[in-house]
Image (tube, rainbow, N blue to C red):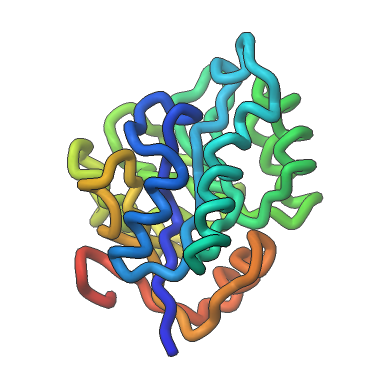
Length: 219
């Protein structure tokens, strides 16, 4: 049996740019034939201005509660952006405790964030690295890049991201970057393995035992 897994999606109100709440997002993915979703709400210091850390987990918990009801796995992730940089980074294998610690590093430098990920066994992938406003991250300080970002309203230059990954021997992934019902189900991976939690999702990515999914096609 094969399982379709979304690696990049956002919930409202945690990601202010999203207009779909966690429970609705999960239902939409179930209807699209997905077995699992990785919630990657925007993780920035601006979010925490006036909000508690537990507020960041709202979309994930709402999604997981609905997923448990209807049989869709929901994994905790994040799309991190640190102060003074426009780049975004997808994190795989996080826990709530890890993110609580990462919150304190958002004012620090990328090497410090990368070291924190390494110390805790978390994978860090640069999201849409060639979208307008992005800068290249040294490949030795990445686990990979998002090769296929399927957000329809941005020019992500996926072909450049994939070429960059191949040039530097980096792994690359696919994600819908869904912010609305209409954006659900355009990317992800397909695997014979269905991870039980975020750490098992990290292990699946490390194993390479999956195929990339892109707008109805395997790649």
